[in-house]
Image (cartoon, rainbow, N blue to C red; front, side, top):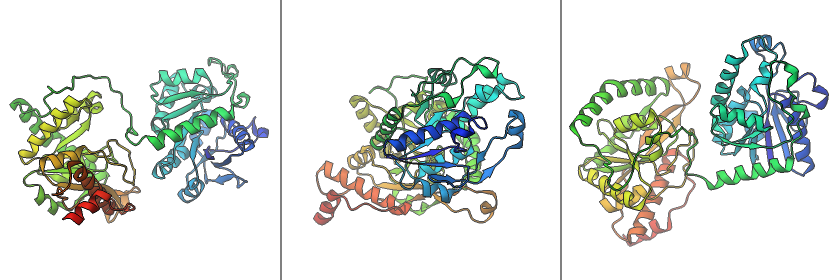
Length: 473
C-alpha cells in the first residue's frame, strides 16, 4: 500500500523535547509501516530527506508568541504535492493546519481516499498559552473542524478521551480509537497530560482502517461529501403533495424569490464565483417541457442552474435529507424543489407528478449522480430516474454541466480560484425504437457521453444499447 502522511514537520525521536508529540508520532508510525513492507512518504515543512517531500516554510509570529514556542508551519506547493500523491492509495493528515487543508483539496481533486488523526488536542496546545483557554479551546475545535475534519469521513483518535471530546463538539465523522494512549483528563496544569511521544500505535490496526476507507470510497458514489444535521422530519409517501399550488404559497414564493433570494444569490455567484451561463439558445427545445440533468459539484449549483434557465422556473428534484435539515429545508421548499422518495409507491406518485409538470411545459431538473461532491471534475455513474421519466413522457433531455474556467479580465485580478461556467448542451431526444429498458440505457449513455465532452473529460465508449438503436434507425 502507498501511504502519504501530511504533517507540518517530520521529526525524529531526538527532537521530542523541541516539538509537538504529533510529529514524533508520525515518525514512529512511518517506521512501523515500512517494517511491514509498505511504501510511505511524508509531506512536511522540513529539509529534504529520504521519503520526505519538503514544503516551503511559513511562520506565524502571533501564534508563536501566544504559545511561547516556535511552531513550524508548512506552505503547500501544488506541484510538489501532486508529485507526492500521484501513486498514493490513501492520504493521512496529522495536523489540522493550512498545509493539510490545501493538500486535502488536491487529494479530493485526484480522488484519493483520506483519513485524519486528531493528534493536536486544543487542551494540550492551550495548556502553555497566554490566552483564555475555555474560549480559545471552543474556537479551535470549531476552526479545525471547518478547515479539515468535517471533510474527512473517518477520524483516527489516539484515546477514547479524544473521541469523546470530538463527539461533544459536534464532529459527525466516524471515529476510530487506535493506540494505547495514556491520555488523562486535562487539568489546568500542563504536566497533567501525557503527550504524543508516549503513545504507541498498532500499525496493523491502522492498515485495517486504511483498507476500510479505501473500500468505502471505491464502493460509494452515492453519499454526499458534505454532511448536515437532519433533525426535521416529515411524511413522504404516495399522498405527499410534491408540487404546492396553493395561492398563498405561490404568491409568497414569488415575492421571496424575486425580491430577496435571486438578488442575493445572483450577486454572490456573479461577483465571487464569476458565474456565467452559455448555450442558452438550446433552451428553445424546452418550450414544450423538458428534463435537464447536470453534475453536482458545488453547494450553489442549484441557484446557478436556475439563473442559467431563467426566466423558466424549473422543478428541481432533491434528496429527502435536504428537507430534514434546518434552514436548508425552508430554502428548498420556497424555491420550489421537490423531494425524491425512497419507497416504491411514493416513487410512483413522484413520477406521475413530474409527468404532470412536463405536461404543463415546465422543466424538471435532476442530478443523476445523486450526491454532491464539491470540486469534482469527473462524471460519476448516473442513476436511471431522469431517463426513465424522459422515456415515459417523451420529452427531451438537455444536458448541463457546471465546470471551472480560468479567470479573465477583472476576475484575474481579484480571484485566485477558477470561475464557474454553467453550459447548456444540445437536446437529446428519446430513442424511437427498442424496448423501454434499452431506450433508458441508451439515453443515459448518450447524455453521459455528451456531458463528458462538454467537460472535456470524454473517456467512455458508446453504450452498447445506443449503438443498437442507432443501427436500427
